[in-house]
Structure formats: C-alpha cells, structure tokens
Image 1 (cartoon, rainbow, N blue to C red):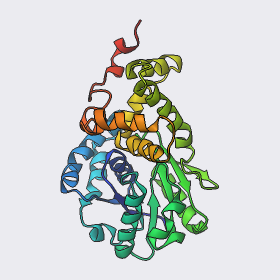
Image 2: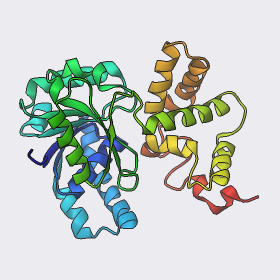
Image 3: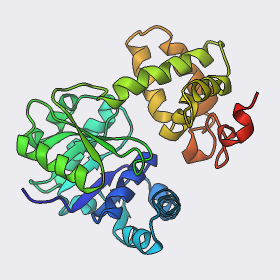
Image 4: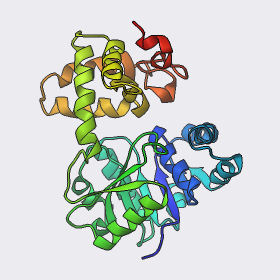
Length: 299
C-alpha cells in the first residue's frame, strides 16, 4: 500500500484552504482547484493568514510555514489539477447535484488509480458513488474546522468501497496529523455532525423564533459549559452557506420550522454577504468578534 503524497483539494473556501494547508504542512504536495479566478488569486493571502495561525497555535517556525506554502499551488483547470494526483478531496458546496456534477467531470480527467473523497458534511457517500465512475475508489473523509487544533478525520466508506482504499485514506489522515475516526457503516452526518447539527439547529431556532438574541444564546453556552465559544460563533467559523444549504434541504423535505429559519438566513445573512469569518461579518464582526471581549461574559 503506497503512501499518498500528492493530493488535490477541490474548493478553496474556509475548510478547503485549511485542508490544503494542513496537508502541505505535513509534507504533501497540494494543488487547490476552484472554478473562480478570484478565489485562486485570494489563496496567497489565505496561506499567509494560516501561517500566522500555525505559528500562534502550534509554535510553527517560519521555515516550516514557508515550506508548506511552497508545496501549494492553485488552478482553475481541473485536468491540470488532477494530473498525477493520488487523492482528490472534494470540499465544494453542500448540494448533492453540485457534488455529483463535480465528480462526473473529475472522472473524465483523473488518472484511473486516483482515489476520490468527499468532505460532505451531511451526505452519505452512496448518494454520490455512481457519479464518480469508480465507486470502489470513492469514500468520505470529513474534517472539522480549525483542522490544526480540532484534528479529527472521519473516514466513511459505502458498501462498494475497496477495503484497501479505505485503509490508504486512514493512513493518509494519520499522516497529516489527524486522529482517524472509523465509521463502520454509513451515517449521513458522520459522528461529529450527528452531535453538532442538532445543537446548531436548536440555537438557530431560538433566535429565528424571537426567543433570545444570538449573543445571549452564545453567552448561555459559554458560561454554563465553560466553553470558548457558542453556537453562533461556531456558525460563523463554518461559514453560513453550509448551514443555509442544510436548512433549505430540510425545508424542502417539510421539516417543521426549517422554512422560516432558511428564509431568515437568506434575507439577513446570505443576501447581505454576511457569511461569517470568511467575509469579515456573519453574526459577529471579524477579526475581533464581541464574544472574545472579556466584557462579553461579565455580569
């Protein structure tokens, strides 16, 4: 079983950039693919920002972060990105049709031996597998935000995944500093999001229904659980597009309250480009959100 050393990360959003940098920091050659020229042009600033964070949180040296940046390239050419890659990790919009279309296009240009992985937060790999053209070499590898600190890698196959491919991806996750978490059967929200999503939905419902302000919901959690931040700070870190897509899908299935929450998120956040940390404004303003101010939790 050969070690995976050359990867592609498809999608350069908050988590896609983190996956790419974490992999490069641990010695992998990484190509980042995005459909947007502007997104690719923004990568240099993202790498410098992550270098600063790794120095602060991990004590990384400039030599280490410079070496990581040297291993990173970006392109809008999917065929160019895929050439010679051993693993492609998809981190695009959390919409099933978008993911299926991406993998169908990728299958046309990737090498026959390339492993495909989805970082989908909510979709089971079996919902995508047939679109990949190589279901035996396809599975899910799911990351948490702030990957350098919350270093879990949830590995989940589908009934057609080759066990040897599964083990290769487990080894890859470990090689980039993650703790591999093995799912023995398909669970659409994995371990982490099975726990996380109901928490976030409860918080959204409290605010969308006028029960409490988002600040007081976060204060409640932070004080009572002695936590570093609450659900709305978490939503900002995730980026509000993914929660909006999840709630919209729930609304389409007729789940109670989901339509009202989706409409509120669209009107007050998505349409206003208040997408969270990535745009500098979500529920909080960045880079200095109110919940980090010592007075936020004072009587």
